[in-house]
Length: 74
Image (cartoon, rainbow, N blue to C red):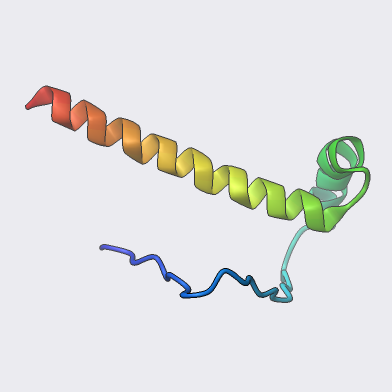
């Protein structure tokens, strides 16, 4: 399955509201205690934005590595 990235033809970004359902209160509390408070000064929005961006960056690095390995194997 190939996923296509949506490309916006504008430099402006837009915000969306995000609602999460069916999260364990224990999981959320642990996330806040261990990640949000110490590393993001309690700012949940910044924590989620940063962690989403880091996940995307890591995926792109992993894909680049796989492509390099495949290229070297040829």
